[in-house]
Length: 494
Image 1 (cartoon, rainbow, N blue to C red):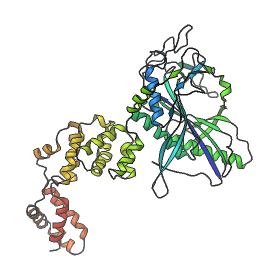
Image 2 (image 1 turned 45 degrees about the vertical axis):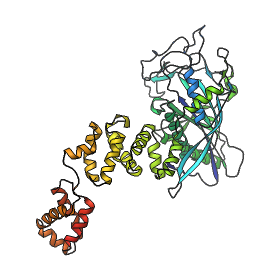
Image 3 (image 1 turned 180 degrees about the vertical axis):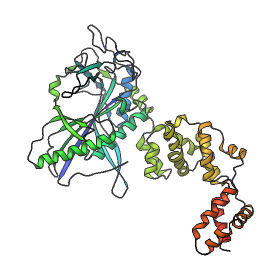
Image 4 (image 1 turned 60 degrees about the horizontal axis):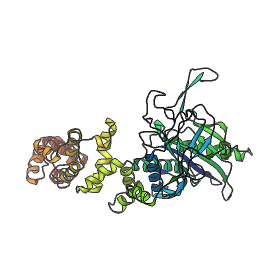
């Protein structure tokens, strides 16, 4: 969750995003070539994605299913009738010299998603961002620049067509965002939804999620939009926020200096933390769209639409609402737990096994998350089951073990699994909660340290912690901490 950062009060930023999500299909949108990432260059290609004469594309049915599910999850209206179009442009990584996309009749339109930010007091603030359209299209290849020249940089470029023909959905937002933090949060929520659906992995580092930002500024109160600038080359959500905030300031400074904002495409330069001009921005007329003659129109039946809609999972925003209202978790806890669907499902399974929701959340977000991060694992890799976590939480609640003992045994259970109850019993780690047994150990600890006792009674009351430590040492950490402190407090005072 990010905090909204407003621009200068006399100006308003108008921000919209165009997001390309690579769909997680095993084969390409119009052919059977593999979509495997990291394959040897130009090995995942065929006659169709290379545009050889006489070949015909055939739509991958899974692409349509994934696109419709994504549209439904984004509250879009699914078109009963849509079609593909040819988008003409000439670039080395586009083997056919045109891209098959959708223009005037996309598969989905008029939707929205909800983002969540925090205000200055840390309270959650929700905002709906409109979705203009979602359409299917094929990806282009990838240029790989090589060589080195002091003046011109690269001395040659290679083309890898493995990505050409990979299935994408392009999701175009309404210009409803007003800051870099809002745009970054929108992109993150969009990725969460795609991952929950299982239609895209959303890995920005592999190019599975690519965002282009359209941004302009205008004086507050002005209805007319300013001149729009597009920003590309942002490889993280943090970079999206920083690039937008920089561009807002750049445009405001230009307007105040009386300069004209040029409609163009700019690149975010990570090293210098600024945007730089790349080229003038094309308009839709430059692409010379016309209906794709080799593909029939698409019609989605009511029955098929209903079937796909029934397969949608509970989405992140719905989970967050339920965690807060039904499980009484904080907005922060709900946010962290629902960021990854597998983590949310693990947590819910622990709660279903009668774990206290707040305690289970603390363990999942704390020690378990730290273990996963340290070992570069996902939650599906750990050996402790949700039921075992619930068992451990119960052992703490009924004072069979302390939180410290739980922390001590957790690494063993995370790596090997098993029952926490059986483990603590086999190792003799059950907490000592019998007052008479604890009093004898406390008396022994006090008698062994007369000097510290004298200092305590002269006013160094912080030494109670020293005596607690001695009791814990004698009991191998099995003494009930709360009861130990209560009994020690009485005995130290004499």
